[in-house]
Amino acid sequence: MTLRDAPGLLRYWPWAAFVGFAVLPFFPGTDVAEYGRQFLPLFIYAVLGLGLNAVFGYTGLFHLGIAAFFGIGAYVTGILCVPQFPFQQSFFVALIASAILAAFAGIVTTAPTLRLRGDYLALVTMSFGLIAVFLIRNLENITAGTKGLNPVTPPLLPGVTDPDLTELRVQPTWDRLWRGYPFFYFLCLGVLALTFYFLGRLERSRIGRSWVALREDELAASCMGLNPAHLKLSSITVAAGLAGVAGCLYAVSQRTTAGPQAYDFNRSVTAICCVILGGLGSRPGVLLGVLLLIGYDQVLTPKLDNEFQREWFQGMFPDWMRGKQYLKMSGWRLFIFGVVLIVMMRFRPAGLLPESRHKHELEPGPAGDSGGGNVPPER
Image (tube, rainbow, N blue to C red; front, side, top):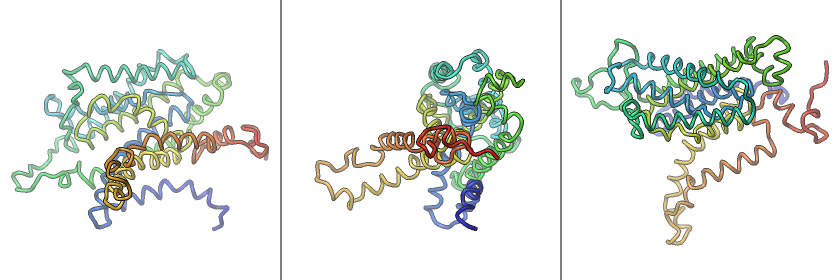
């Protein structure tokens, strides 16, 4: 094996990462369990990012309302599972219902906007996200308003109830139920692996190639006999359904749907940043973008904050500066995000692991021009 083989081997790094995450809980130590719980948002965001990549990366539709479908999935799960409603469904029923209803919402909200493109479509989808947050906040009889629905603690399968740990004189901790670590950890990792595999098969199918053709040139695609309206609807359906799945996992992992602020425009922007950072249209790139962006935010930043609060670090500054927000990594989080995105757009506009077509279009060629300089030679 030589260095020339390295680019080909990079295709398999996601599966190697899946294996690494799968064996992580078997390492002894409390720190491993703590990190395992912190990795749950990575898996959920990765499912959300892969769903957004189906509509933004494959089809080229600039969708700014993916967080609305994420919220629909979470609240469908909450309505079906919390005690104040009579449904009391299991996790898998809620998971399927969240995907179906979120996909249906994607169809209903996209059908009137099929003729829109570019910035106009982005504005309409952003407006839908704002409307969804408004409805969640004001339908208090259904969504509990700003409080959120809780507790979201469904049984795993229909007809199977969780054991009554109080009768067994066992403390009912999360670790003793399927919703705790490492059981729910493996479930989220399995859902992510299935999503990654499903989109890979879809990408190489006829509909996946049709999405890419639509992204490259909608007029040429329609002249070849493709139906742009049907392709856009199918892309939105897949993206919204996967966002609903991610919302269901999020609600169960948090034991609550959280408030409407958890599904606002910032959530959509974060997912878009993950896709752009990794590479539009690239499944491994999306995973890498989520690992870097969400991993920094959810795993690395709390760890560094704890270290920076120690005496060895605080002692480097005078008394009037100690404990200030600017001496915490979380205080610089958005600044670092902005700097990274600026650097990426300047030196790597196609992303860290771009799809081949985007790489040839966005990265400059040998002569310094973009697009044409990187066109592969004819065979």
